[in-house]
Amino acid sequence: MVPREATVLHANAQRNPEPKMSRHEVCLLLGATGVGKTLLLKRLLKLSLQGAVEMDSPPHTLPTVGTNLTDMTLRRKKLTIRELGGCMGPIWPSYFNDCSSVIFVVDSSNIAQVSASCIQLLSVLSAEPLRDASVLIIFNKRDVHCTMSLVEMRSLFRLDDVVACAPQPITMLEASARSGTGLREVLAWLESVAK
Ligand SMILES: Nc1nc2c(ncn2[C@@H]2O[C@H](COP(=O)(O)OP(=O)(O)OP(=O)(O)O)[C@@H](O)[C@H]2O)c(=O)[nH]1
Ligand SMILES: [Mg+2]
Image (cartoon, rainbow, N blue to C red; front, side, top):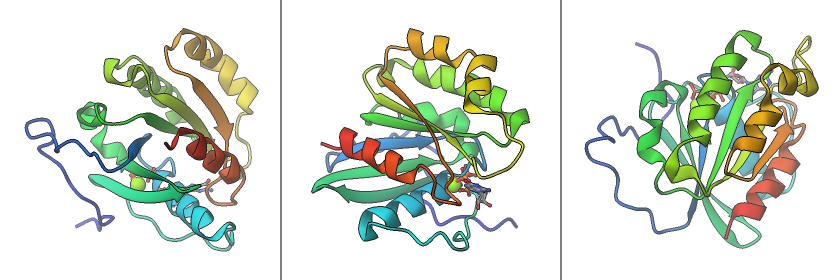
């Protein structure tokens, strides 16, 4: 049996949606399997707590089967980040109602997966409950060699048109959850959406 990340599994989320979370703002962390969401979350939490992260060997992660909730306090504002495992893709929309922001992670080193991720991104951006959400697209794994440049990816997948047509305010960032590049910018974006 495949070991799994310790998560809260809501397999019946469509039939029995969770009660509304009134605690804090919720930011959804979405993206295909293996793009680096859990590692990113671990790094961001450490960075928010310690102000710096030692980028030695990255902590081990396992595929998230279910959801992974992390509370953060950013400049005295509370934010809950809810990672939805890539394998949960078909039921992501069950979680769209109670969030105010979305981070969508793309593995920019996996060119075969990028086009599928862009299609997934389009369906997220066109979801009615997310109409007013702030959106951050992270091109992760920029530490891996031989990846396409962000300019090439934007042009190949017409990302500038996608962003221009979307109703949401969208920010795009390059990052590496492994090396730490771009994580401060991600944290600054989270601070801007936390209330
Ligand atoms: N080189 C490199 N590897 C990364 C980076 N981010 C994550 N990884 C690795 O990618 C693998 C998958 O990372 P996870 O964080 O578990 O991926 P995930 O998006 O949470 O996957 P699911 O939970 O299955 O949806 C792990 O081996 C990570 O160490 C990065 O920026 N660079
Ligand atoms: Mg995960």
